[in-house]
Amino acid sequence: MDRDGFVSACLHGRFCLYNSSMSIADNITVIRERLLKAAARVGRNPDSITLMAVSKTVEAERIQEAYAAGLRVFGENRVQEYGDKATALSGMKEAEWHLIGHLQSNKAKKAAELFQAVDSVDSLRLAEKLNQAAEQAAKVLSVLIEIKVSAEESKAGIPVDSPELEELLRAAPNLIHLQVRGLMTVPPFTEDAEGARPYFRMLRDLRDRIAARQWPRIQMDVLSMGMSHDFAVAIEEGSTCVRVGTAIFGSRPKPAA
Ligand SMILES: *Cc1c(COP(=O)(O)O)cnc(C)c1O
Image 1 (cartoon, rainbow, N blue to C red):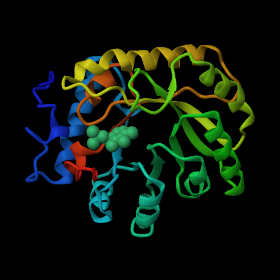
Image 2 (spheres, rainbow, N blue to C red):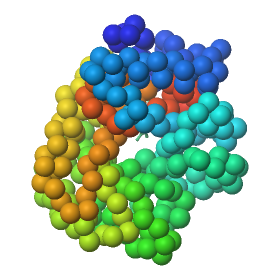
Image 3 (tube, rainbow, N blue to C red):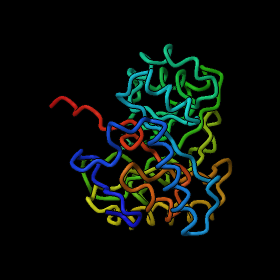
Image 4 (tube, rainbow, N blue to C red):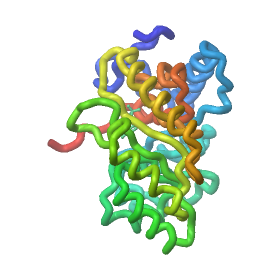
């Protein structure tokens, strides 16, 4: 249980508080209350925190329910999947679509056309491809740099304080069709949400150090961290965007093995 008394093991579907008798709108109400409480605990303005609905694997109709409940920022993991759903979702005029999953360079063009933001930029090569693609699409794409905060092999992202990160920060001011807005991370999963706290701190600390260097054209306003089971801890550690899927839409089908 976390400190609000919520069972935080929804990912495993064992004791899921966000059960099927609750509607998407009910789930969002519960999450908003927890978001407000977490912000209040650390004296933060809740308006500085975006609740992103992670709608990967969720069908269009249910995504529209989240929109009707007031959410405006949506995260999808795969270019192809969102491409297939985009027409059905085109009625959500005020929605902002972010790509939050790993992007292969060869899909940069499609991604730049479909999304307003790519929150998972994890190499200079990808940033260069996206910059070209955004130029062709005549737009400026918002991007976050995805940071790998743990040694876990399975996690994407650029290591903290690595030469690769330095290289990307140096190049970014010249990639004028990209606007770097901040950092994103996915910490290692721990049963107890508290386990993520040191990783969230690490990301905030890195953000502060990059911001202090005042790179031209690089903004460091956004800290995208925190998911269904640990978003309250992430807010306490300074998150400005929590990416919540399961707690809004219920558990996802297991990916095929
Ligand atoms: C799926 C996903 C989320 C949402 O995870 P939940 O645990 O369902 O809230 C957040 N961020 C990324 C990058 C994801 O892939």
